[in-house]
Length: 437
Image (cartoon, rainbow, N blue to C red; front, side, top):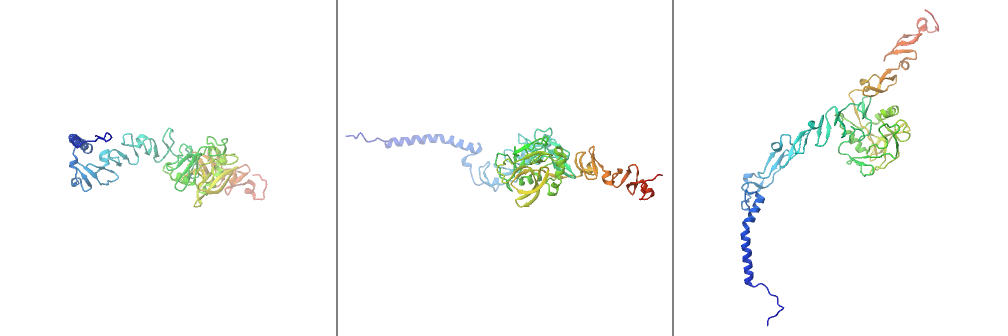
């Protein structure tokens, strides 16, 4: 009697029939599959059966190939070349993408020579054609300007403006040109690439290899009463490592820029106190009598030391990690030193070809273009020029003079030996008090 719980299975005959059907189907589709596989790899120019390691026709660097092209090319090409995989050869970028292309791959040009940029079509174009007086750029902005020009912020009427030390962001002391605002604040005081610029409430950790600047309200207490358009409240501040990098890489008319020395900074206080807004536009930690006030500490996250806009970095180190700085408080100019990771103001300087005396008039110490702003002792300022102070030089009775001697005297006095003496003394001797002709 048959056991109803026993599972039934394929008989040998059924299994044999199934295998025969599968074999027939596979045989029918094999040519189609092989063709598609060959087309996907060889583009219809070969087949799997063509693959060989005998590839001498493509050079010693081809390890696997077909009769039509190389499949595996172990070849390194030069910077201005690209690798053609199929022929296993190096070809010039300039031959495929034009003479201006300096590096590329098989699909497009990657870089252009200095003074050119890649446009939307990956073609090299001249920066001068896109931005007037621009020497280097990308497709969106100019990066540096021709000699005699300075880069200005986006939105300015000219990307590259003519530079001289009477431009709005600069002032000249003797032969030294100085930025009138902190780097990062003026229209042409652009912080160069390579510096991390963050908000005061964002973290940046300054170090010798990580340059940090902070923007926003960098003063805890401030006013703008004597600061003109340059408020003491929102001045960009940077660590000392960034300060040196910024000034050394500042691009303004190809001059060599740097931070000021201690000796140079020593002279800045009189200029700021006497000129205020039109001078160096420093900010005072206390009174703000001659400038904007910017007292108190507003946190620059990540800066280990102070975050103070009223302090200015010097170029000179006190030790490996500590540098000198100056600050203005109640009108007094004070020197000290601080950790390089503190966040202070950055002003850059450069030596000009001519001094204020050469540009303006003898005795001119500080100038702004054709106008003198301050004169040396023995001179006084008149209509933007320095006039000789004859009285201070040659006595109260001298009414006219040049740099070497008095040239005219008051009534009752006459010139003698380049100075004014009473007429009676000259005519009748020193003891004569009154006389007539």
